[in-house]
Amino acid sequence: MRLADFIEHQREPVLVQWEAFAATLLPAAARMEPLELRDHAEQILLAIAKDLRTSQTREAQREKSLGRAPAPIDAAETAAQTHALLRARAGFRISELTAEYRALRASVLRLWMDDCAPEAPDLDDIVRFNEAIDQALAESVTFFSAEVEQSRNLLLGMLGHDMRSPLQAIQVTASYLAALNAGERVSDAAGRLVRSGARIQALLDDLTDFNRSKLGLGINVVPADVNLADLFTDELDELRALYPDRQLELRVSGELRGLWDGHRMQQLLQNLVINAIKYGAQDAPVRVEVTGDPMNVRVDVINTGPAIDRATLARVFDPLTRGRDERGQREDSAGSLGLGLFIASEIARAHHGEIQARSDEKDTSFSVSLPRAATPQ
Image (cartoon, rainbow, N blue to C red):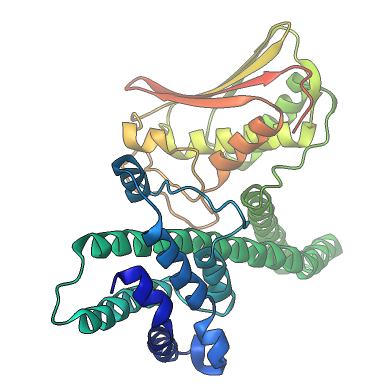
């Protein structure tokens, strides 16, 4: 019997084995009913049988092997994709999801070969079946991973939101203690609370922006008519107070007024300058050069120090990525989520701008190009 016919006529023994194996995937399967354990197994098997009966050219076979099988015409999702979503929501791990397909492959082939004996099974059916299983597995893994990432981002977003109220209470209380003038020890303790609260607030802000981007919402911007020369002067004054041992230079030229979100522009500059301070030579200034022309404004943040290697430079704007400082040491993660450059790039993108990085043995620069009056995304 050809494999497609065997799957259609003898699918119940296969489903029994699927259900029995799924029941061993604890703890997720502990509270699941038999129908939940089987889930979309029958639809997956019937889709495989249909695929086996479908004529396939060598080119189509090659496309499928590269993960480019045609999407179903009559459904928004395949059975394998829906199965992955339900397994993810039931608490399965991705290793357990892939184990189901491994067990399914073994069950079908073993039962079919026993049914074919003493005749040899059709080799082309075996090849086509393995291709179909691999395709279903690829679809499942892709949807499973997307669902897990979406759930993780939602959880982090809710966590960041719920932490703001107790943090605000801590900050208000600390400010109240600092204003009491109740002695040096109380004032010092209150000052430490205020500074620590500000650091936590900055981390939560970064986490919120990161989650908005990962959820497809993008960085929230509110454009207004602003002058970047004034905004950047104020921001660098604050950074000089935070880093009194570092030299920060600002050079401006041309017209620097435009429609941008002023707070976000300061955040963009702050992230780039702090990055330059962390990784640049301690005895060399960080230079900020802002130049305006009739259509765009260009912001360059330049530091002297070791060149960034090509591999790191290629992913320098990826989230949760950290480089090495001027001594070649990996950046200490305390007080940082590795999101500064990612958020800077998202702010530029939200204003229809772009950001680029360049590095050589002389210096490293991050250059932002901003349209003067583009409608923000």
